[in-house]
Length: 375
Image 1 (cartoon, rainbow, N blue to C red):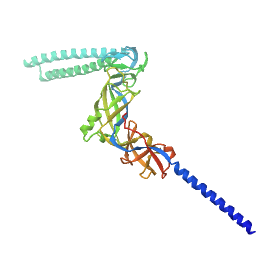
Image 2 (cartoon, one colour):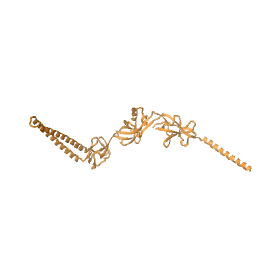
Image 3 (cartoon, helix red, strand yellow):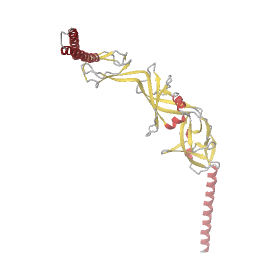
Image 4 (tube, rainbow, N blue to C red):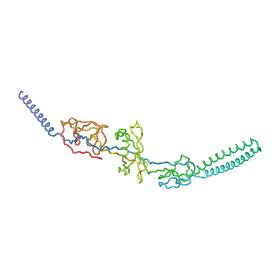
């Protein structure tokens, strides 16, 4: 019995020794296979900063043309999509009613003018008779009063004549300025309601306004005074929808004097010449300004990780241990990311092998060659 117990004890000791040896070998293997990661040093360097905003182009002059008088469209006198000059006739509204009222007003004016001449002549005759004591004062006063009535009638008839002439003139709708037209909104025979029915849109694309909203934080970054900020705003470049640089420089036209409290933005307008008519009203473009004289903390973009709405990097400390560090991002500068807070110059961030590491692990670092490049 004792022999059996001694045998069991011996076998148990062998098993314990075997597993202890295996565990030590695994530890030695793990220490010999320490994870290698590529790291980059956090830099405090000159980094181009891009200020970029979407902008909607608006023509300097644009109008939905409407007639001042109502009636049926008798003629369309322009080519849709073509150019028009200022004062060029574009539509004719049925003139018959306005011509009749004009002729009536003209006839009434002539009657009023004739009555005024007659009453003036009578008044002069009564004045002469009064001077010779041939009529009494009542007759003279009545004659003079009739002259004033006739004069007022002439003034009223003249006003009616001007009104009728204006309506007759407005029956021919003319271009308010030179520009290009869209498709006509009415056709021959359509009924036009005065001041309500849109006839056509006329656009002057010779100059285009680019409206955009700049954040209040970026606004104050541009300069130290209102004047210096406005000078920087004038340096924004316009990029077309295909990301090509527009070849003509813009001029600052307007900066709002208040900040929108709901969005924290300020409305800015730049005016761009459009000699080749490349720009169209309603076009969506990008306004961009690059500043290259600002120092900032920068790291390669590859080091930045995102979890929900937060950003972080893995930092290797002096002992070779991995730390997870939360960061606040600034603008992107070429292949580099500007960091507002969370890192200091000289620290090592993991750029390559991020998927192999976890916080608090020991790693072997391998420097990665990185450099700041512009956009």
